Amino acid sequence: MYKISIVAPLIAMLAVAANLALAQNPTNVEVTIDGVTGFQDTALQPDGKWHVHDPARPQPPIVTPGNFSQMAAPPSDATVLFGGKAEDLSLWTDRQGNPAPWTVEDGVMVSAKSDIQTKEQFGDLQLHLEFREPTPPKGDGQSRGNSGVFLMGQYEIQVLDCFKNPTYADGATGGIYGQHPALVNACLPPGEWQTYDIIFNVPHFGPSGELQSPGYATVIHNGVVAQNHQAIRGATNWKSPGKYTPHGPTGPLALQFHNNAVAFRNIWVRAVPVVNDP
Ligand code: MG
Image (cartoon, rainbow, N blue to C red; front, side, top):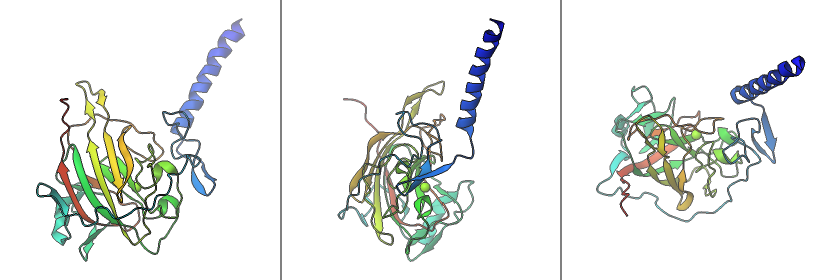
């Protein structure tokens, strides 16, 4: 009896330690399934079916887009965050508040050196922006034309060149990174301008920091809905299923530098407060 009473808790403790080790494992092993490289030893998504960045998770179906909002002129009440002038870069900084290290050439802003974020803070918003992936394409998977749109500086809508470039579904273009794959792959070939029209509702937190309602993102990629009022599971991070940290009602808009020179143009936002009255 004595042995059993010691052994059972010991086994339980070892199991807990093994689970902790798995959850905190900084060196997950990459696996490739049907040409898609990702992980199957990361945390499970809340659906219990797929791991974060699971290469077996179904790919968004390819939809060839039509014309939609290319060069859409900003509405009169929009805040223009990049209209094509070099001085527009002064509306942005790096993550530490230093001058934005991106370049502006021929009316186009190109990612370099670090993420950038707006000086202005935004809450619920409508965002329009256009991006162009490098051509000829270089690298594969997550290394090809990677950037991103960080809502409130921390909820990433992925920007990637997913034209004939398979990657794990929750990290493909139009995905809420690491959480919700896009409903479609509406990518145009690299070198062509693509549009994002995004509607975002901020998350709300209670007085003790508890989550009262998650953030929601609707993403239209080249005129095709990629996210339909999709609840966000928290700040997006590599190999993380997403976690909320309480914050205020507004935050900056940030764009990612991920070692690829991705071009942006025609970026503007409008405030779109949610009206809860029926
Ligand atoms: Mg990215």
